[in-house]
Image (tube, rainbow, N blue to C red; front, side, top):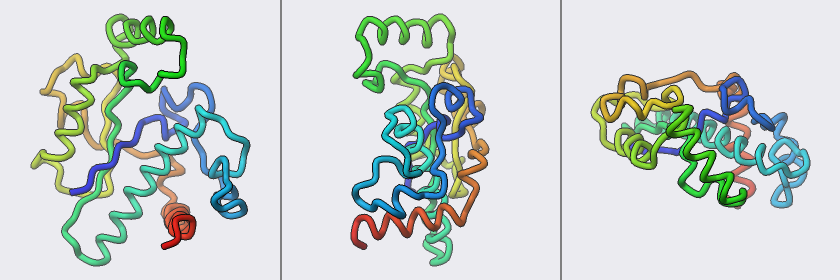
Length: 187
């Protein structure tokens, strides 16, 4: 079993993905034309918010394409990705004002109930790695914001298979991203 960390922000139609810059790899122009010197996969100028979201979209593409390749060889290995949710206290916001980060953490996790605890995030990974309920590969697992309030009973119930973004369903783009990545790292 292979488990890849992704995020719901890979989907620009999700609540988190719709905030700020939106994830898209476009036509992969950055990798196609600039190779190792690319700033953004789509060829645009560097944007930290978009780069994070794009990286999670790349993780979803990687999961789906690796599963496709493993299925061709009848390996018996499953590959899935997941979103542990918005966990502010992990260092994700380390470049923000520390006062803002603390206030945002308390507000998101305790008041608005859209953030998750570090314990919940670790539990989602444990579930992905060890649960006998996960039998198919190529899937994306997530839960609605604030699902940690349901505790460990949410794993497999609120935290379950979810649709990937429209773009992440493009298997030809996923295959091309894989090929460009192989070229980039010299395989």
